[in-house]
Image 1: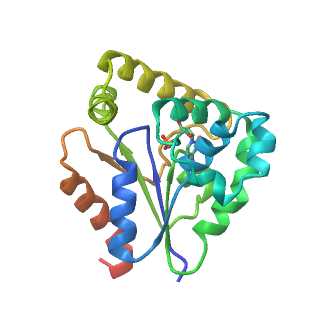
Image 2: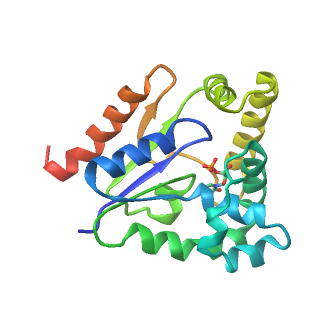
Length: 196
Ligand code: DC
């Protein structure tokens, strides 16, 4: 069965948690596409060469989850040749047999516009920054500034900017607990699978 769930949205909106839960619930494979950009940013050197030569080992580094790695990812992600080098792998993953969940910024708009289900998971910048701050600590105002900076870059770039696909279902997690957000996403994915 070919069935793609595209989950897009800004940083720290809850995409990762929702994506993992949806994949586990339906037995689908999951690809965190942000990790690809984080790995390219962390590799250093020429980002285009880094993207073209990306290996599984590059994705295995334990420093890819930091705020700094997120900023570096957002910076290399504006380069069209970097994005182009990563398209094929993501498309193949999305349309592989058995169902797939991909989360990122451009999955429903560019990577897999034909996805069977598209979700756009968002929350206010203040709430996203607060959640990130609970994980990483430090100065909350600084975390909020970084969230806003990353939003502006991801939404403002010319190539594949972050935006909701016109046929995406928007889930605003600002006022939702994790369980409620996951339940909302699972209900949207279940509908076409069960014909409801
Ligand atoms: O989801 P994340 O925070 O791990 O993503 C890190 C950065 O990578 C994000 O700020 C922009 C970029 N990215 C992208 O441009 N397209 C994607 N599909 C996923 C991530």
